[in-house]
Image 1 (tube, helix red, strand yellow):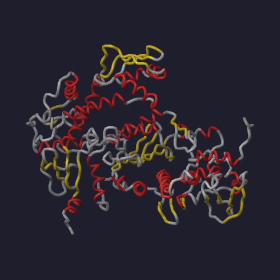
Image 2: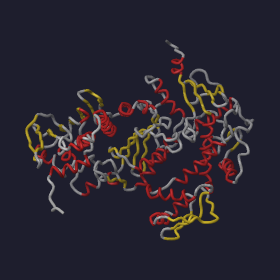
Image 3: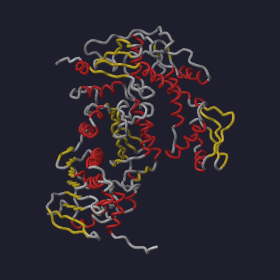
Image 4: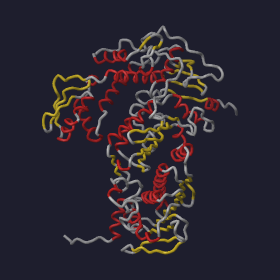
Length: 636
């Protein structure tokens, strides 16, 4: 074995560059973060040949004193932290002191800067094996310009892994998009091969912020977004989440920021997926731009060299807060919120009187506030039961949770549905609702039914245009939400197993089952540790008695290991309720009267998540008057 030798500064920096500098976009990220930490109000970016030939970042921040310029390109030199206490409560985007040294070791880098106190600027460059800094005078306004030329010119193996110019520029553009979404108070510009690609002014007002998001994420996203803002236990979550109907085939429109730092975190991703669980179709992905504000001391950003990952001190608290906030925001969405997005798309220039002032057409829901009040329109129901499971009167009939529980209790007992919607006669106490008002009178969001099409769809007229409702999908969601409320009212009951199920697990899983015994019992699972690597399952939820108990328990333990909690039981229970709601909802070819159709529309307006059925399919669609006019060439 050869003797131990001290690495040269350049080789040490090139090794560090292997972690920090993956491609031109990695360089841009580090340079823009430095500019933001310097207090820049505007940041101008020029790139050539996808960033391989040139990346120039110019800012109007505080600048770097001439005496500190040699240190700026030295490894482990930074002005952002000085002690362990600073590291444990990092408030800046950068803090490692490695970026400039790593970048300069694999490129030709020059840094020009001037502080407000200096009369002239200075430029610093590094050359040679020892990377000695050379300083020279330069002309430059207050601020800093960093030029990175010929990236990977001295590491040809790394350069061979770069993609085409277009691909590398797409990564650069995405990097700047993330930074621009994270800092609304800063203006950004991007030029590629002398062509202006992006020019963003600082966005201070809510309207300006939504304009920036529309420019970066697409106007359709902001037109179909719900604004949320919630605070609890020292946490604040605000931003925009797309309506479930605006889902994506891939997770390409998901931005999550922690204290203005864009991150990718499994805990956050799980909380978001859980919030969207029963409103997305198949493998669709939600879209969101969200900002989490926490005490810097409660989050560890020193996890990965790229700083894309963080670790929360209390991950379970953060997970629950994100999930509950998004879950409530999506539950509070009503048909009139969907209308705003649909109308904004068809008539982009038209004012949106229903939107909040300065919201740019996005529906606004403050998740910390109470739920939206139900529309004050006549309410009736196909089954003489008010929406949301509230014990209100509807046509003289009072509905309680136990009435709905009887429906699926009969299924658990081995029986079937004795009387489904398709066989049930129309309730005699239903009265015809008012005809659509003439003039400027108040109108329900989904309007009034006018006809039924092929026994499948309800056609309704509103001042927006024509509303088409899939009556089975809509009633399926209404029934499903009532079942969930009924289950919550009676709690989750357990059923003992005749023969306890013995499972061989790891010591870690057995320890979790023992330490989380109370949590598991709340889920309807009675699990006991009977050996170092053996557990016994003695009770499971009564509703899931036909499920694979072994797989259920193993999945729950896996969730506890990864997330510190599990929603498997709830998910499986809701899946069962969804199946029963599907079988218990009004079927195709059931002829409905006009009062019954209007009753279903009113229930939809008052029911959570009524825009989608239990499987994520849309329950209704709008064709606006302008779209109808275009279809028939009216006004031409």
